[in-house]
Image 1 (tube, rainbow, N blue to C red):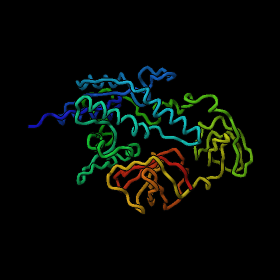
Image 2 (image 1 turned 120 degrees about the vertical axis):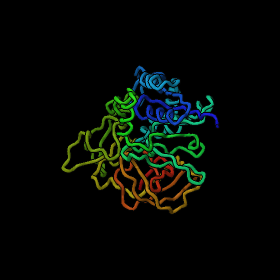
Image 3 (image 1 turned 135 degrees about the horizontal axis):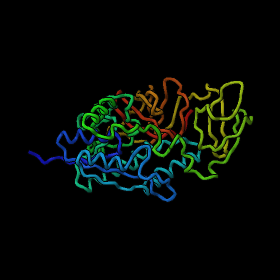
Image 4 (image 1 turned 30 degrees about the vertical axis):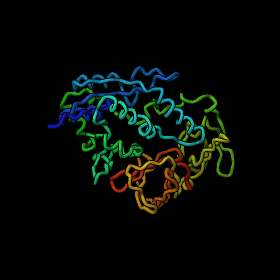
Length: 355
């Protein structure tokens, strides 16, 4: 009989990661927990070990309830330099960044896999609602059973070597089944509220990260250059936004472009939000088998919107274009685009431009 496999579970303090650890225990794995803290860099808010995506105290309590060893590791410095600085820089050039995807790609999984290797663990597990399927030696990432909670969109940055060392135990469960299990086994994580937004955007506000210069008021203009009002700092706006513009007009107006160089917000009618093609950079593909030019696939341009048909063409090793069957609304540079073939995540990138 082979040696017991060891797995390091990323515990956030939430119910999904708690159930991931529980299920692996029941499968006979030797389980330990790890929690990363991201908010100790100079100038960071004093959140006392808890924000919208993790709770150090609750993660430690989950580990005690399960009877597993647990450690907390501060990776604030890496988080600040890899994620926060990029987040600020992208807003400064008029983009709408998605730090969650970047964090998963460049920090969280890399850190977890690093500490797992150092500690002699065979696998890393998380509570993401995604599924792994082994097909002819290639590990593929599929949407979770609970489509409302599917998180493949944020994991386009994973690679084959990563996927061979990862486990996602809750991907086969609905969210209700996760809560039912937590209640059955008396895990206190079952009563915690779910996190939906950015971990650092309390009540939707992340402007504390920006300097006064970043939040300088400027003009709101229409496509003809007519001044309609004043904005309160470009990081407060995104493509497609209608509410909170502080302008009056005889028709609904939306943010259609952000001109960071001129500190201007350009507004227009809803019809002006639609574009049919995007260019993505910083691409990653999960399989070692390349996607052929002209491949017809589905693309998701925002987490909460369905994937839609598009034709793929590679421009460079880390760049591609997508031509959609139908024009898409409010595609925002800086956001992620994830590529799918059916339920299988193929890869993705960061939206650079649209036409």
